[in-house]
Image (cartoon, rainbow over all chains, first blue to last red; front, side, top):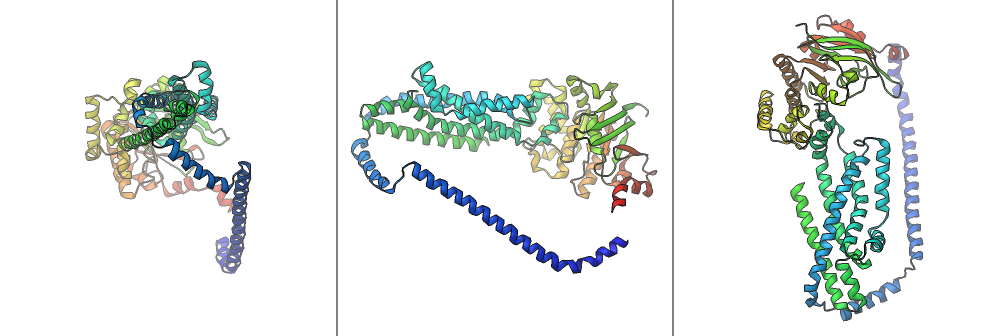
Length: 283
Length: 255
């Protein structure tokens, strides 16, 4: 009782002091915030300047460069050689196959690695770490580099491109899947586990319903990216439209090359359109 | 009456950080008993319930259920024991994206082969049974809605239906009404008690609300600081006992 009555009297005297104390605290925090913001923007600005200097950026070359680029586009690339379409269909299909099969390879291996890497599903922490290390390694090597290495082993052609895309895809999807899986609501899993469900049953009935949307969305996103990558991979000899583009450029057949570029463009738009529709349907 | 369903001896649980949650708990529960467990937050009520189906691993002790020691059960044995123990959670723990009826069907997973269960290949009898149970908890019209479209009280009734569908010997309900309004709380408790009567299973319910405990329980157990502090009927639970159960002596002295 005594302490209670003392407490009752205390506030009025303290109120003003506390308010002004709070205000200085507010000012102090505000200052710190401004300082940090200043530092962050300062660092970003300095880095930008450094990079501009490092890349030898100058405005003049952009202006003259743009002019030369347009000259090149209209005199050499234009008009695209429409008669080349027939011979482009094969390579275009190759690019499509490479992207799709590459995605399937990534999905299959990423599912295993992703489940092993997700902290809430892994059989053991060490297995999770190993799985993470494997995906990190596969991710850190770009598909083009894989392709260059594989060309040496497997030779020129779409198979090389497919495997290169598949390998680098495992790196990306494995990480993405693991993160989606780790974001799951563990209460829902516990609810199903408490019914006496086994591992496969928990995976099918509690994990999959939560994982599905993220799984579909990431896999289709990878398919989108694969189409672009497949086009680039062709430049190092991994088959498809890129390969065709590369060979026509080295033969100075710019109008055929222009047709190949248009084809790549069309293919990317087409696949993006289809995956967007699929995503809407499934999710 | 008289058949012992759960027989617990010297159950202990110490968390890895050294917190002692349960100290030498021993008790027996008979078939069909509706037992409400009360006690202050952090007393170990939740840990106690979760130890019984080993969602939380006990440190030592013995839990005899259907003549087997749950604490020593291997993986396969644990699954068989778990399917005979229905669990109801504070947060319902339904799979939110799945339809209501599928959540009820999950009660049958412990009786199915791994693959059939994983792909949700429930047969006609199982589906009819699940729909029948949903009707019993008054939710037949919500059967094909996604679980997260239902209100809290309705979700908890789905959870009860899932537990009933396990044809359990024992139901563990961990704060089943803590996140519900008084009205839905009453409805959920009524259904739970009714199911306990009709199916004849034993029920352990953790509750914060002493008035609900007195109203529904056949027997009340008070847990304080990881130990059984009170064990008796609602009439024996006097105001003095309740005050002593919930008082925190150390804090009172310090304050």
